[in-house]
Amino acid sequence: MTLGMDRDATKHRRWQNTFLAGAIVFGLAALGDAAGMVYTLTAPGYVLDDGELVGEVMVFVLATALMLGCVALGRRHDRRRAALVAEHERWLPALSERDGQGQVDLDVETARLRPLVLRSVGLVLVWLVVLAGVVAGFVAMSASADHLLKTGARVTGEVLGVYKHSRSDDTIHVSYQVSYGDLRFADIVWDSGRPYTEGQQITVIYDRADPDRVRTLDETNDDQTWMWVLVIGIVAGVSGLVLSVIAVVNWRRRYRAVLATGWRIASVTVVPDYPVRRNRHMPDIEVAYRDGTRLTLRAATSSHGSVPLKHEPNRRAWVGGTDRDMVVLFPHGRWREPPYAVPAYALNERTGAKTVAAPVPENPEQTAFVKRKLRGFVVAMVGWYAVLIAAAVVLLLLDLLWPLFFVAVVGSLAPIPLAQIYFTRVRAALEEK
Image 1 (cartoon, helix red, strand yellow):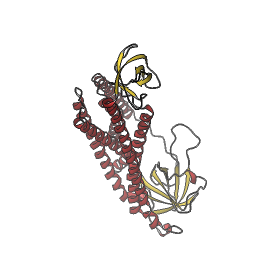
Image 2 (cartoon, one colour):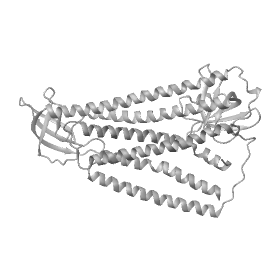
Image 3 (spheres, helix red, strand yellow):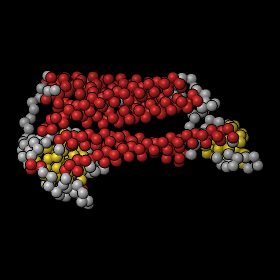
Image 4 (cartoon, one colour):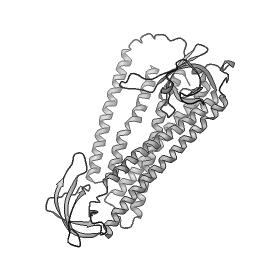
């Protein structure tokens, strides 16, 4: 592998987490769609709409293909990342007696990185339990609505008002009479899309034990408070699961990288991104090795943060790992005595004294090439979203809401990895020129 190829691989290794997150999201989508298909095919009395089964099969195939694609891209980057361990001198100086253990048992601290992997695995299990609870909540809500439809008392009600709200669910206000002659009124969530007019007669179904609990033949009138709780649970569960799986993979890579390279003693200064401004980032960690070389790291997103350590500049610490998989080991944290490991990744390769780089002269041929490629990418994105909008309109007309939701989400996220692949090739072509 040439040096230019190494730099290109290093530059794009940050996208590995994007592919991993994509594999998780698309895997969950495929699993959810498969569960939905099983339910529609096995639930007694469930009637498939025209094209519903075909739409669900297409969604499953597309989600599975995208998941496998993300897994393949992630494994390719993983192999490139593992190959960098043999070239750790680009980020670490040669091992010497001056990197001795001192007050910290470095072998023990290397072994202590493994429990961080197990802790992240525990968080994965926690978020899976949360998602399982959310699914159980949706199933229970659907079963409750179906039970009311089958066992509730049916009476003829009247639509008194139709209300469309900009910040909440649309509703219809209905009146209905219970069995003992009492006239009741209720606001029913209107989410079926069926048109209603004032004065229209409709069938109202109410619970004999609780007459205020009502629905219609088309409107399930689910409890919106619980609905929002479940939606928030989905967002939190999927986000937490993605971040936890990424943490498991990253801590495992860091542990293996440190195990292969060992630790190097250095003077370390934590530099937070202050003052507050746009495009903020995690704190930088300035590393000065004892041989005079320097390295700039950036703290990775983790519960093991580095900001509390900003008050002690040029403090002694140990650095291990390579490239995107590095760990800074402080003798102790701000409020704890045991050694404190902070995950980080390199912003550059190890250098000597800082110098001001000479300006790079502009190359008109490369400038024209970049403009041409950028123009082509913009045209491709415009065409992509035009097709996406057309597909969404067709699915909306066919009333295939779940495929519509999936196409909207996937269609919005797909340009991210596609753009990464496209511009990776553009940069490779520029280096060849």
